[in-house]
Image (tube, rainbow, N blue to C red; front, side, top):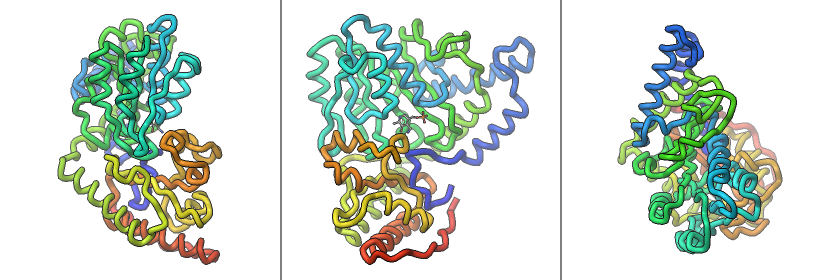
Length: 395
Ligand code: PMP
């Protein structure tokens, strides 16, 4: 992946080891794992080994892991299950900054009236007091709070949320799509439901997983139409896809030493420091919050044009960034995350999301500041820029 790709929260390319594994498995173990012949049996055995491996990484039971088409499916399925099992008058509690696949699924299955939103503070972090209050108020069927936000990168107090829910006996769902592959998995297995998505960490698109904890397994169905995935999800299992996801996950989680994480964080901080010094008109959202090491959300200068002009110019210079989450980008809708954090409409039109990856080095962060400066100079002077040579990718 080129070092100047700064939209890793939207997606990442499949890493080499994962794509090789996918091709090998597609050629060698392509049989339907539900078949009764030996080739199918072998694919089933290999698939179940991967389930065991993922369960081990999450510290959950093997039977609790469902392979899905990604986090969107997983999040929808959790909401459906919670609304079916919760009974009359039960509501869902979600944070105000959840991904649309949680928000819209909650509204679909619980109705608008059946969803309570937890406020976030100005740094975009869920307020635990608000959670305590809403749990005292009434019958809650599910709490859903993500591990880290896809737009701001702000790390949520998911461990504390899980603890509060456990004390009250309320099921807790953690959308960990932006967490898995970027941070330690320790403690995730304490959440009753966990969603993950392969394409956020160098695996293929259209593959993901869901942990369905404990008794929920008895009545849980994501897709109906066949007995696959222990009866929890119908559809032919995608062994090559799951293998590629696991190869990518092994690679990312295996390399994740405390020193490496610290190094990545220092590089992001150095970028932010330079932005502060060289572009004082640019503000960093949730600057003081604990954030993923790869994510920076900027508010561009108030005196300049909106974020799309910046994005187009940065693209011409070879830097791919985002104006917000890919799911709402280009729709002209203001981001519900920014809204929840108290940004006004004008500020929302000026946000730029920068999300690096494991391949991003200090020199790439530095080159991005140079490019931002160049764009700002150009926008101020109103002249067009020439396409600059792309910087050489490091990986
Ligand atoms: N949740 C979060 C926090 C995400 O960032 C995304 C991807 N934008 C999703 C869910 C959806 O994941 P997928 O693409 O696997 O459906």
